[in-house]
Amino acid sequence: MSTDPQVPPVDSSRPGPQDPVQSEAPAVDTPAAKPAPENAVHFTRAAALWSALIVGLLILIVLLIFIAQNTDAGTFHFLGWDWSLPLGVALLGAAVLGGLITTLAGVVRIVQLRRAAKKNYKAALR
Image 1 (cartoon, rainbow, N blue to C red):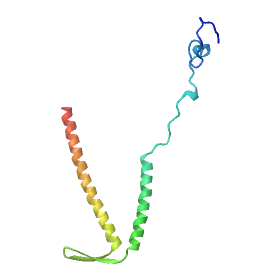
Image 2 (spheres, helix red, strand yellow):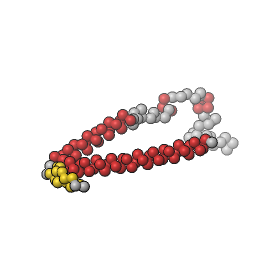
Image 3 (cartoon, helix red, strand yellow):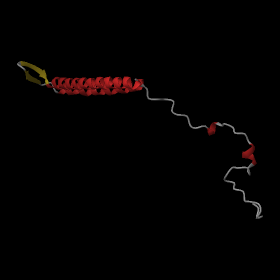
Image 4 (cartoon, one colour):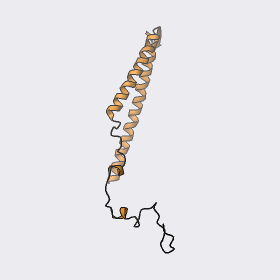
């Protein structure tokens, strides 16, 4: 560093024209300058299917244990019909029937929304 008052001090922390190596060197694309690549493995439909299959099998195992432990027969009466069924099977059947009714209600709502969206889309094109 110079103590001469007419020569400005050189700031070595900033690259600039006072640094001849950086101002004259051409820009080189080095591998270190590139950003890190993204993860090449993405979550796919096949991965989702595989995960759902594993979860479904675990639920099936739990349901089979539940049915095996609840084998006492129960008598059921409905609109004049009488039948006997193991309690585990009856509860599983009720759960499946409830799920089907819920799915049916969801399908009806999806159809309604699709019709409304199609109608709005056609109206927007006019």
